[in-house]
Length: 229
Ligand SMILES: [Cu+2]
Image (cartoon, rainbow, N blue to C red; front, side):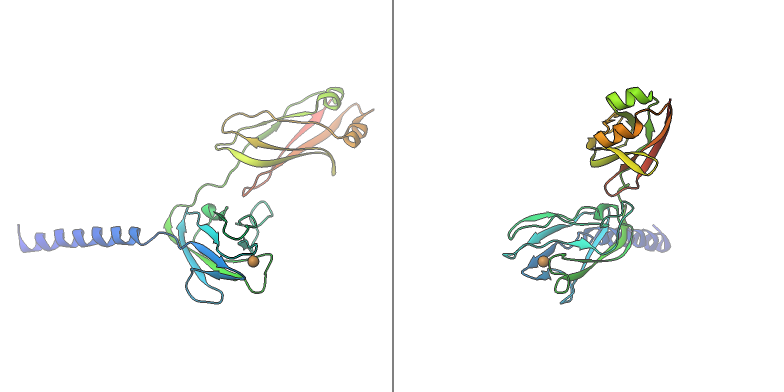
């Protein structure tokens, strides 16, 4: 092997070792708390935690009181970009929504102790964010009479299971029915039954333009429209 070739091979080997080292260092810092203060991050009293794209850190409440970790910024669903449920002392839970974050700096706080408990989550450019949940939506055409009797049938085809999807049927701006459901990957056909008030709004009409909006946790809402005849 020539000297130049040897140096080249050594250079590649070093690059591989450095790359592997970088990957090994990438594990996220768990977010923890004792009463009324976040712990486990770097710095204080408003610590910084670091994770890679696609990761979902755990929040450990090591205090005696209830605490949570809630993003200041809202996501595409109009709710917190990431959050934990409010956890009792000694409980732990996932910081849900972090798995969709792109590289950047995000502030979060405890909604119960908003001034004492504030912190920063830094997402590095390593890793890949998970795709946000999404689905197509199509409202099946039916007669006004059948809609009053049976409700609105919706076709949705998400790529993954999505829990806590809220379907709201509307006539103009008025809600006429609501349903919360879990969608499975593939074709789903949930039915949104009309409320009493919704039925009376449709009664006596020969046609009606109605819509169904699906609010998808951590995703963007989707709306399907149909003209009932
Ligand atoms: Cu708290």
